[in-house]
Amino acid sequence: MSGNKTVLISGAASGIGRRTAERFLEQGDNVHICDVSKENIDEFLATNPSATATVADVGSREDVDKVFSDLLTHHDHLNILINNAGVAGPAGPVEECDDDGWENCIQVNLTGTFYMTKRAIPLLRKSQNASIINVASTAALMGCPSRSPYVASKWAQIGLTKTWAMELGPEGIRVNAVCPTSVEGERIERVIERDAKRRGLTPEEVRTAYLRQTSMRTFVTANEVADTILFLSSDQASKISGQSISIDGHTEGFL
Image 1 (cartoon, one colour):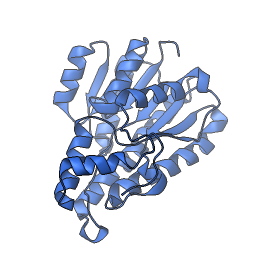
Image 2 (cartoon, one colour):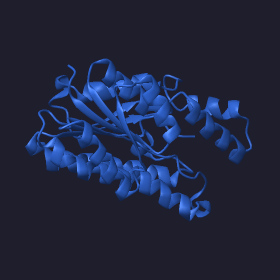
Image 3 (cartoon, helix red, strand yellow):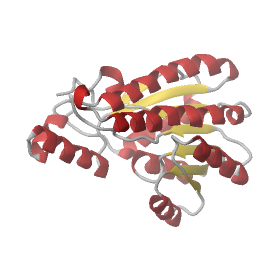
C-alpha cells in the first residue's frame, strides 16, 4: 500500500498497536494513535515524531470525542481505523469473576470498539477503499476457560465485524477482524505469571501448556500481526470484508 493515507489506531503505544503504527509510518502514512498511558505515548512520540497522539481511554465517550477532535486538528480525512485497545480482564471460574473487572473489560474491549467506530464512520465515508480492522483473538473463535469477560468481549467484536461489513459494504467500507493467539512480549508474560499463581504451577509449565495449544508450538510476534493488518488495510485486499483472520499457528484448543 502506498503512503499518504491517514490511519487511526487505538491502544497503539505498545505491543501490536505500536508495531502496527510504526509499520504504517515506515510506508509514509499519517498516523494518529490513542492510548490510556501518557508515559507510553510520550515514549512513542519521542521515537516516532511524525505521528500524532491523544491520551484517551476508549471506554470513555468524552475521551473518544477528544481523540477525533485531535485527529481533525492534524488531518482532514481518515482512511483506516484499527480498534486495537483492549484489556485482559479478570481470570477465573465464572462464579469467581469480579463484577467490576467484568464491566471494565466489556467497557474497554467492546464498548470502546463501538465508540471509536461510530465516530469514525462519517470520516471513512469520504475516503476511497476505507477500512476498519478489529483486533480480536483466537479466544473469539472457540472460547477459553476462566476468561469469561475477555472471551465475551472478543466474540462480540466478531459479531460486530460481520454486522458492520454488511451495513457499510454498500458504501465501500470494508470491515475485518484479526485473531492472534498469544503474542510474545511483556503482556503474555504477565498473563502467564497470573495464570501460574492461580493454577499452582510454575510459569514455565504454563508457558509450555500455552505453546501446546497450537499446532506450530509457537507464540506469534507483534510484527506478524502487523503484517496481516497492513495487508487487510491495503488496496490489494480491496475485496476482503467480513472476515476473521487467525494469526496463530493453528490453535487446536485451550487447555
